[in-house]
Length: 356
Image 1 (spheres, one colour):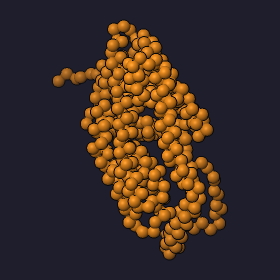
Image 2 (cartoon, one colour; image 1 turned 135 degrees about the vertical axis):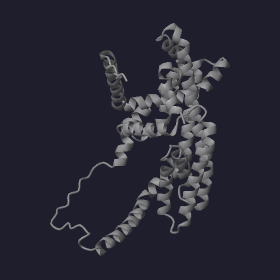
Image 3 (cartoon, helix red, strand yellow; image 1 turned 90 degrees about the horizontal axis):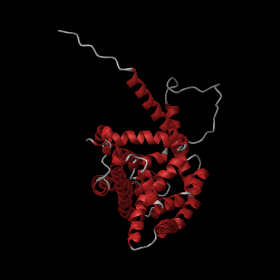
Image 4 (cartoon, one colour; image 1 turned 120 degrees about the horizontal axis):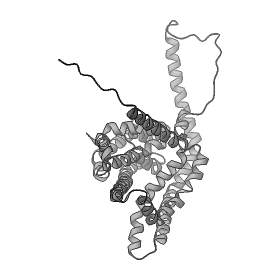
């Protein structure tokens, strides 16, 4: 039998692969180094996608586009202000009561620590470590959770200053959409412009469906969770209900994040086990129904990502941008899949990302 010999890779293909790896590394570093700017741009683009139908509707009614853009931005700001106004009183009360709640939780933690200390002292001396003669050194450092939340935004001050630019960015994106659209298409050859336009339309539909669908799912979930929290007598239920509903939208870890705030408040409020069981069951059942029924109907039509892709995307974006990366992981990856589905050379990657 003749021996099969594999041809060695050519120098050109090796150099091309190396350049691709270097380009990907540069892009990842740029996303990390300019994370606050990129996050602001991404959020502004998603908001502009959501508000654009309203601008187009007013434009059909012969309203100048810049007027319609200004009206939609002001309407969105008014909605945010109204939401903040409705929860402001409860939020201030929660902030005022945080020292008492923290003291109650500290007493509970101290009780458990004393129990574990007694258990450790009851162990044989050969099993318990001896710290005699060893000096104790404590180093104060920033909380890992705080580092995780601030990784992509730098600091709360820098983030708040950056967020102030979002309304202006959204307005300019909406008002100059036609100009930006035409100049962007002119960057490509004439024979590819229609294809590029189809890709942009696909991304627009996906982003709009994802944002509006998730908002609707969160509102429905909050409408179920909040009355139950109120009926239990859970303090600050009007805040904890919507917070739990929105946190539960995060894939996989959302239910754990949604359970944490109400259970901590309940731990400092209730003495019996019943309220804890009701809170846990309510959040988990609502999360199960939202994930398996509401989200596929309202969001899943355009966001077709398999479980492995979502898991890898959450790991990557959380590593890159921290907590905000978890929130943006799915829409960013769905945008990438939309591009892959419409580019012939990248279509196999898109099939892999969406295959079951």
